[in-house]
Length: 496
Image 1 (cartoon, rainbow, N blue to C red):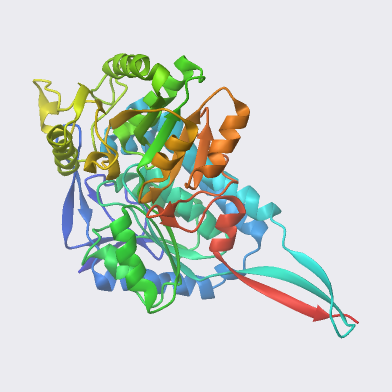
Image 2 (image 1 turned 30 degrees about the horizontal axis):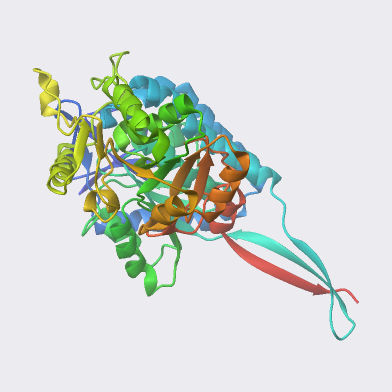
């Protein structure tokens, strides 16, 4: 049983699906809980298989009705309208993101929402100015040919995005998919449904044709996420999340030989050489380990420090970590919020206990704070630093996805490169050194999709993003996104 709403839904107590230009309420719901104090923020509609199918069919109808035939300039104009719509409701998006994640207001304002706007504007400009490949060919039989490459929409894209950076990563996929003339059926994480629902309202307000953008809410296994990935009429799946889930999705789409793009987990390393700018390296590793309570796929959970500065570095990072203010998002003094849920907190705390069992020295942290108020019902943990574990320890090899890092000493360049690469993951790494040649040399040897030198978490959106090994499949960003969300066709013409 569903209820159709013909206008934008501002009922914040019930978050609905958005299908074929209408907000749709389904009978089954689940609660959206605050990670700050555990209170219920809203009820969220859960999509069943029939509702997912209706979203996919609406997207196909919109493709055939003309969206696939729009020009790049027309689609760019739509993306700019969407970006302007988000900007006009900037404070609402900040409030939604903060409520769902508990992150500090300052981060939501400067990173999450600003980057969501930038995603639409960047891909609008890229699609409008994109050029194709062209080759002149002299064949063996003496004929002359020209070859040029065209991009056509893939069709209907299934998008599944994570909870750690909800709007940022949701729009990172929606924007290029629409830019290339596809229609989308998108599912945000069940942990963070609010900003995606606001985005659906913006799509409605700017008048995007019905069926071009469809939003479904729900869980993954045996639920909306699985119904979407297994739907026979989905042309491609793009997913950000756990490696295990990515493997499950790949199996689900294998029979249909569908395009997939995966950005998965990481166990990223930071390498600090003795010649590094010490203060900059400490500040950089503090950010790369504890930003967003460590819930960024790019965070550094493994830190390798050259032995001559090891003890000094551990002491400095301890001092900086202890200065972090864990608390409520609306408090201007707060620098670190909660984990996404109490369930995830239990997972992280289990690793805190495991580290001690494995022989770690707890430099700082290692537990949950006590506030003496409603926040004790939230999902907070303390920023944590360990030393003393071997590289074979589970806490050094498995992704924890919390505010924690293990610091280990190393003696030379070849050793640290080998240790960094001894991982099942290959998403990101950061190198801290004042020797430019060393930075280039080590970066080339690191087996990850992105390497920063004297920086972390800064992106040019035109560059490729993705990981190796268990960290992903494919690349998105810039022309790599344009290629993934397109069907490339080579046209070969004999001219003489």
